[in-house]
Each structure stands twice: as C-alpha cells, then as structure tokens.
Amino acid sequence: MNISWNPRHIRFGLLIGASLALGVAHVVVSPPSVPPEPMNPSQIRQTLITELHAEGLDSTVVRTRWVEVDSTFRRPEFRVTVPDSFSTTKFHIQWGQTVKPLGYESPARVHFPDEVMHIHMVRVGTIHATIRLIPS
Image (tube, rainbow, N blue to C red; front, side, top):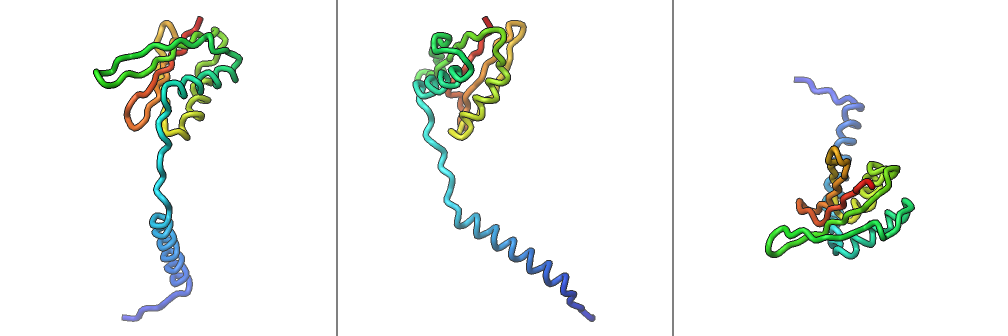
C-alpha cells in the first residue's frame, strides 16, 4: 500500500486542526454570558414612555392596569392610546430592538377588527408585561 502525502492535503489538515483548536479555546476561555436583571414595572413604564416620547407622544397616553396571573404573580398591562397615523409595526420593531439587549423577546399579535396590537415582554418563557397599542 503506497501512501502519498500531497502538500495541499497536509496544509488542509493543519488548517482544519488549527480551526478546531481555536474553536475549543474560544469555548473554554470565553466567560459565560450573564443576562441582565429583569426590569421592574416602573423601569418598563419609563422605557415605554421614553420610546413613545421619541415618536411624539407624551406620558398621558399610557394607562396601567395589573393582571393577576396567580396568587403570587401579577404583571402590568400598559394601555397606550395612539393616533390612527401611528405606525404600530414600526413601534413594535423599535421596542424589540430596545428590550432585546435586556434579555427580553417581544412577540406581538394584532387583534382584528379593532386593530389593537398586543406586545408581550417575554423573558425565559414568562410574560413580564403587555403593551396594548389602541388606535384612537
């Protein structure tokens, strides 16, 4: 049995080996990512008001009510009255970009025929707050 060592095969093998070693080193050396602490309801409300202010709306359009989930947990529901010209889709995208670095997902659903958008703030499978964008 005659084995010939092609220099291209040797270089390719060394490249694969080096890539594998770097990948393992990256996983071993990298510190684990620690998600930030969850926001409390007043922080969520303030962030919401800041985002709405950037869209030309003031804090008077936000009303808060509490939803009892069970005997130990309740979450805020922020009801926001928005003008018909307000782009709820654009706001949903911007809101998602704001809360994603804080460890939240922000799925939304539009309920027809009233066109109310419900944006949920989800963290580790739990809904922490809901924003309802209600056209006026």
